[in-house]
Length: 167
Image (tube, rainbow, N blue to C red; front, side, top):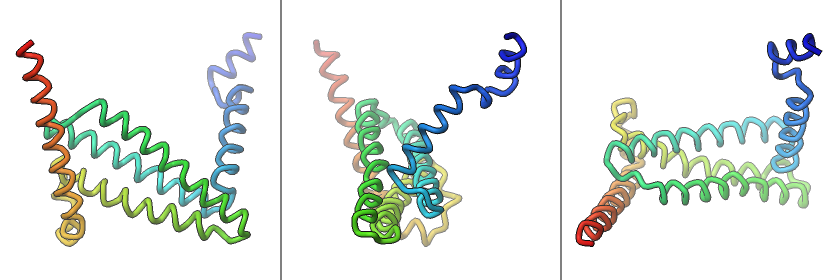
């Protein structure tokens, strides 16, 4: 027994539970998004862009003081929706026997939107020196929108805190 436990401590991926979890995740992924390279690479790109958007958005909100856990919770719901929506595209492709047309359109469309959001967050976080000027010009509307929304959250929080001071 100790020999078996020792192997699992050295390499936890050899444990039967790890195999079960891996098989469940792989089956879930292929059921939702498909099994081809387009699904794997498309969703990998999409998830990485979403993660970078969250990271840059969190950094930007901490920097300008607009951080709100309620807004973050709503963001989690929004992200769950965004991760499940491409599954509808895969289902449509399966029903219509099309080669990743709906899936690809949904992933590329959402990726474009999230890329703009991420770029605006990167700028708001103070990392704008790494963004070419022509890119900033293309996302200037998103930057202004995010600044206005952050300012609104700051004002709402200040109003809430003032109300607590009065009580």
